[in-house]
Image 1 (tube, helix red, strand yellow):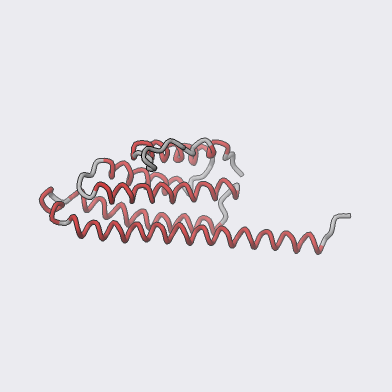
Image 2 (spheres, helix red, strand yellow):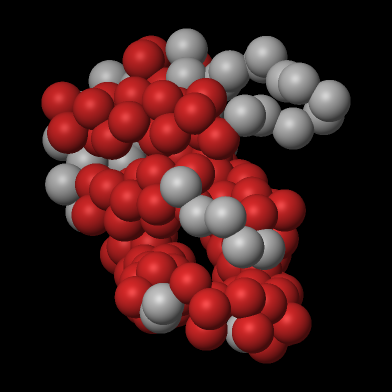
Amino acid sequence: MFNTTALSILKIPVRISGVLPLATVVTSLNSIASVAQVSELPYIQPMILRATAIVTTIQHLKENKRAFTRLAHDTHKMIETVMSAVDYRRGLSEELKRNVTDFTVVLEKIWVFIREHQSRISLLRLFAVADDAKKIQELRREIRMARELFEIRIHENIVHLVAENARRNADHPPP
């Protein structure tokens, strides 16, 4: 068990034109990482730190800025989804740990792509804008699919727990 009251204060409602500025996303992720560290969530912290590195790096990219910004927001949404599930569950089950590992794999793919993008010389980055845009779309699709699968697994787990609890209560009615 851990104290998750700090998680609820991390919901940052300030939006500019419907989108959080990347600096705000980085601040949010840094806050979540701090809460994860003090709340005994070491399993989630590497995922959050990788997401923070991704968004921080995206802040400084120039080519495909809009597409990279969307990728950063998808990454942030994924972290928010995980943290709300952790907050709801009040802990990390083995299934939740596997899901976090799946997310971390997707984040590592993004990190490798961003580092490759950064390492190209400026002229090559300009010529690769269309190819990079396609790759960013693929990565965004992977994040969305991983997040949707995560949400389905969490929902199925909750339904299973409710059914099991109802069965236990039926087997052993209160006196």
